[in-house]
Length: 184
Image (tube, rainbow, N blue to C red; front, side, top):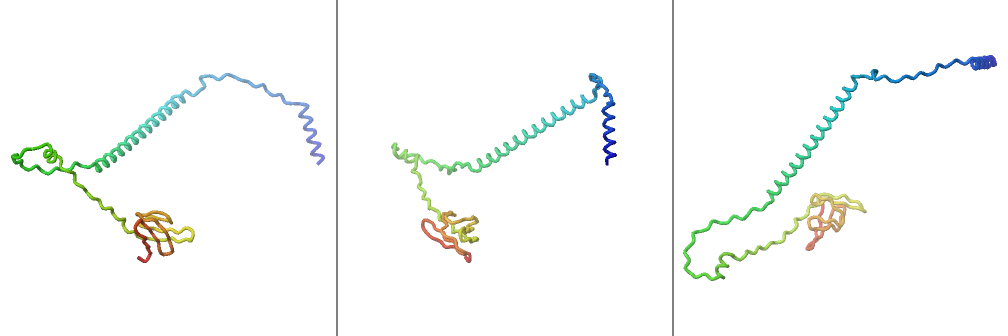
């Protein structure tokens, strides 16, 4: 081991005694002729292609938005025309008989403006609810009534859910209380 250490010491002393001269750095200006003249047109062509693609994409987005809005307007127009009430059709007028009695302003008013007809609307009863399923849990029972998932206190078809057991649901309305069971 000492032989290796002695050899390293001698090599270090020799290197320090005779340092190698470093050549000076030489800087020179860049010549404009050394740049690649074919690169500039390729960059320009790539830039133009990118701009064309961006413009086409913008046009496509504008077309989609215009057609989407037109489609919504068509749907709105169809909905409006479907819900617009039509004027009542008047029955054909019969032949007019010659007037033989004297007309007073009151009789003229009655004949031209007949009294409006009264229409009585009966309140419709809510349809009987149908129990379709129960998922019972002691703290949060759930039932499916008329296709709607309900819990205690919910309303379905004019009824309020009062109780849910393993096989029954109790519903109450302003006029009646109904108990629905799964066996019905």
